[in-house]
Length: 219
Image 1 (cartoon, helix red, strand yellow):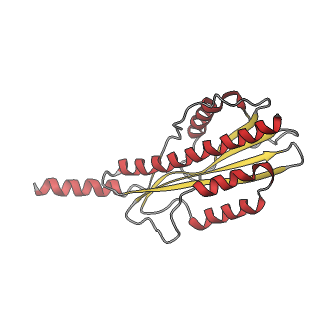
Image 2: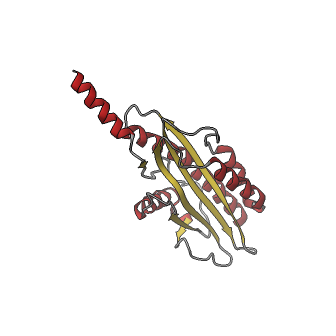
Image 3: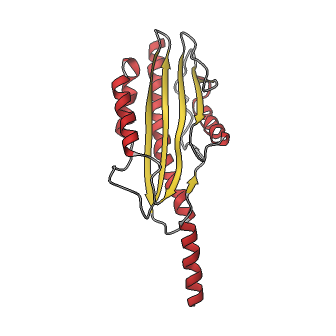
């Protein structure tokens, strides 16, 4: 019995020492069939993570957004310029996963990003900033994450409107979720998944609002 106890303790210790876990960016929501734009929005995705980034995540998120928004989206390369007279929405994955004992999101960095967009956002899409800032749920700067799996998801949503001039701003959408290390890797996976679920709901809420604004401007 003692041998079994020691084995289990070592097993969970090894699991608990894992650095990071990653999550597949699926979105649990239904297609938007009640809205149709005359001119689709130009859309692109880029995985800008310093670690864990890959094209698979971009492809999965692209497929999910295509399923939800259909012909309202016209896909382009992330680094393409927005043509005159068009609107573009560019998604940049900043963080997406979980880490044991430390946070992937800096509270200071996120707060600075949010303050920056509040100062730069104006015009018809300014309301999107208010929705995002009221929905993001990150921990305070005093929370270190020690002893927990900390899930984190952060996606920048950049809106570019070249219909009149060159109007653009970037909305940071982020969330964190903590889980105890009771189930090792599974706890890390759950923390990452829960953080992404919060952010994906905020993303679709923001895009819904963007589409409504664009549709109303077309009428």
